[in-house]
Image (cartoon, rainbow, N blue to C red; front, side, top):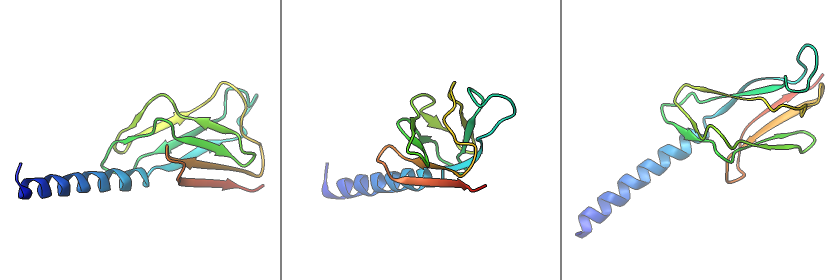
Length: 118
């Protein structure tokens, strides 16, 4: 491989990595239900949305509550372009009032935050 090819490959890799980083920062907490009708156990959910044109690997991303409870996303590793991902554990994990949900990527960097004060 000559020097020009190496520079070209490096530039293409840089563009690809930049696209992945910017796409992951676009993921948002779209909606959640912290106090569903009836029992909270197994009925609370958080929906993430990918408004970008790129698929984003969300394996090992974390949803954290105001109380510091952490839920790690282990399945559904890819969030496709313009797609939704619903996280709904079989137990209660959100407070019914004064709650925050923080979404962090696999590096621990905050991607989005939703706060409800009532």
